[in-house]
Length: 255
Length: 319
Ligand SMILES: Cc1cc2nc3c(=O)[nH]c(=O)nc-3n(C[C@H](O)[C@H](O)[C@H](O)COP(=O)(O)OP(=O)(O)OC[C@H]3O[C@@H](n4cnc5c(N)ncnc54)[C@H](O)[C@@H]3O)c2cc1C
Ligand SMILES: Cc1cc2nc3c(=O)[nH]c(=O)nc-3n(C[C@H](O)[C@H](O)[C@H](O)COP(=O)(O)OP(=O)(O)OC[C@H]3O[C@@H](n4cnc5c(N)ncnc54)[C@H](O)[C@@H]3O)c2cc1C
Image (cartoon, rainbow over all chains, first blue to last red):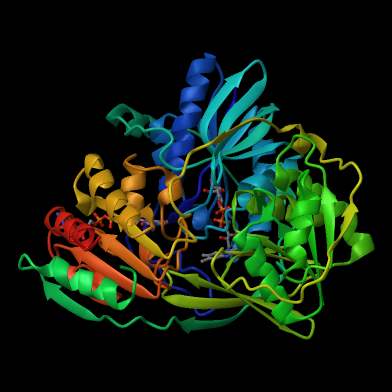
């Protein structure tokens, strides 16, 4: 069984974000890393292929400037190879354009039985890419999975809901988005890190994939500073701090 | 302007997030219709009518995922019905629906919307980025219908424009292979007290509560005592102490209670974006420099394992 994992390489979220003068996320300020949300998909894919006994984990990523550092992280975890789409024409791509690229990259990767992605990325977090990719491929999308099982050509997930979870099933191939924390992503071993350096990364452009770039149908019209909330009273607890909280709640008629 | 709302329900009532969007649509003016995927459309339509929805396009879920079937149904109707703008809640099913529809219709999406403005034919969606420090407005420049996803709690839900919504049953929908995903079972977890997004008081715990076993006695107990709901930072959700449904913040829920009480939460921007809109904020944290104090109306620099039990006793003593 072959599992393709969509992995986003993002500016390190520990470094405060910035917008460029044309209102795009500045992507050259911080070192790119594997989006932590995607480390769960990679781990899940490795476990599923392991269980199936054959097949490989293939990565697909769209990132500027031929960025591979995040891909190497995932390859070091155990993925076999990657398709990287990098193209200046994709700067400022919307989620749908990104999805068109990823859907074509999945086809280029070849022979996928299952595509995994995170429920939302850490930088753009539109949360629409997995289901958009599925629709473009013409496959079922099983989103917000907190458990994934494969058997008899079918995928069954526990889908997070407002009230609990639903058990959802579909035949393969399918796209599944996984929530954070579902599995414990492994730390790459030294051997894994060394091996990752020579694993194949097939780098292509949007036109190689036959995806048109250009106007996205959306335009940023204003960027403003959000109003800040003022800090109120702050006291050191000397053993009676709770009394101040009680008085505050009484004033609000909460108690 | 003809605005459609992708309606969701709970116990045959429209969800609050749905009614928030309908209320906003009413303010923007024009015709408001809803698309609802479910077998209880008549009951849901009654609730929607009280908020000014004139017509409900009812879709049979066919055992599939509401968002997937809904997207296919809408795709089949847009040519004839010509909605200008379709609003989805940024929820599980709302996200499925807007995503699959956008790919079907080849239309861009504006997501995580927190404000919405209409000027003639132009529609602008506002969102907050970088943990709510910057507000970004974007407008649609392509072809209609425009597709926008709105974060719950962005608008107030107020009844008005009451009417009887007519229900138009949409015929069988062909969702292609997307329709192969079937819901086999539903598991509903018991919840005590009000819902997190609707509670007047929210008490949230962070890593500073120390350990998983402290969540019940500190966070749940105080929340129960104040007839509120308990929430959490992502740190303790990721640690597996509490389920994801309790997470407040950028990747969790937005809450705007009368009082928000943060226990042992540092106040990362991604947490604060989900609670900064609360009427009153109380923070208890042992680090006087914790960023949470910059938004707190009342800050107690202290140890939650000491202050909270005292607080609980004092409130109980008041009866
Ligand atoms: C603050 C901000 C707000 C934005 N708002 C919008 C908006 O409202 N509408 C819009 O159309 N675009 C928006 N964008 C642009 C959007 O983020 C990009 O188009 C991005 O390439 C894809 O969307 P996402 O990261 O939001 O995807 P999500 O749907 O949040 O991502 C889900 C998962 O899909 C996979 N994935 C996503 N992108 C890639 C990738 N490049 N390579 C590999 N896997 C990937 C990952 O597994 C990811 O975790 C925004 C960008 C920023 C920075
Ligand atoms: C893309 C992205 C999305 C995110 N989304 C979210 C989100 O939706 N929600 C969210 O919450 N976070 C989110 N985060 C994580 C966020 O950045 C923080 O890591 C998280 O909020 C920290 O949780 P915390 O405050 O519980 O823990 P910490 O930051 O570790 O803070 C613990 C606090 O407890 C205090 N403390 C310790 N002991 C005590 C004691 N005995 N008494 C009193 N105080 C004590 C400490 O002083 C400290 O301030 C996101 C991060 C990223 C990158």
